[in-house]
Image (cartoon, rainbow, N blue to C red; front, side, top):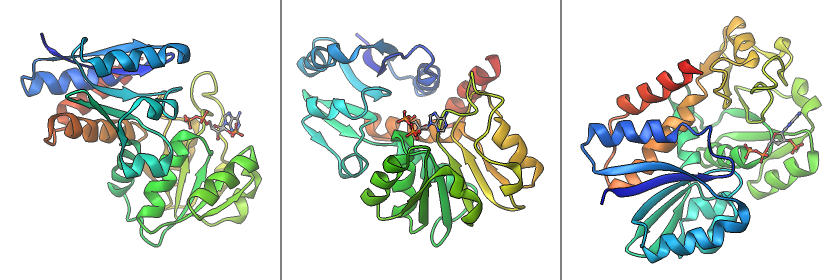
Length: 271
Ligand code: ATR
């Protein structure tokens, strides 16, 4: 029986992880399958008990909304990064012991580092949800100074306390200088594709701009940042690099990511 892998979420039908991992399995001739597991919150406990029993040969999971926090309850160990972020996005079943990791922060770090250094840079993160937590962790770990701005200020403040950085409302943006601007909310994503949280006058030539929304491939925010000659970090790169790190956890080797990247880009172009 092929080894089983998959992404667990609710809903999960839009996930592009299957195409990305199937491309990697094919390239390395790995006898494995990667599926979508749509599991409602009430069914998570039972699903994880089955994974632990080994009956379904499920070796690894990518974890997405809404399970990233809850799933830790059902794991034997959680690595220190996932603990610090407060979210697990990867599970590995090692002979019945379930171990949790977070690779979102690694994905964000690598995507940003393709374009810029982080140490000593001023970073503004828009949004204070789960994705923002992983990105703030990546930036503070790398020695950047971070300010979190969010519609709900209390949520930004909580995250800022967790990572010893600054917080404020979205309206503060114009009074804060940024070398790097990261957008983590759903604004810009369908059905908000004609919206952006950033006034185009804020963009300065050379500013690094990272919108983690990758569907549509180029958001309004990114188009306006490009017009101002900002340096763009493509949003899909976080997904690609967090997947690369998941592959490494499951197979104990770094994949060549070209095939994974092509699968993602083909899929995004089809949408
Ligand atoms: P994720 O895990 O993908 O980051 P999340 O935890 O639901 O998702 O976080 C969503 C983020 O988008 C939050 O920062 C949210 O702001 P609030 O904390 O104020 O809810 C932000 N967000 C969602 N819709 C928004 C909107 N219309 N305007 C501004 N921010 C929005």
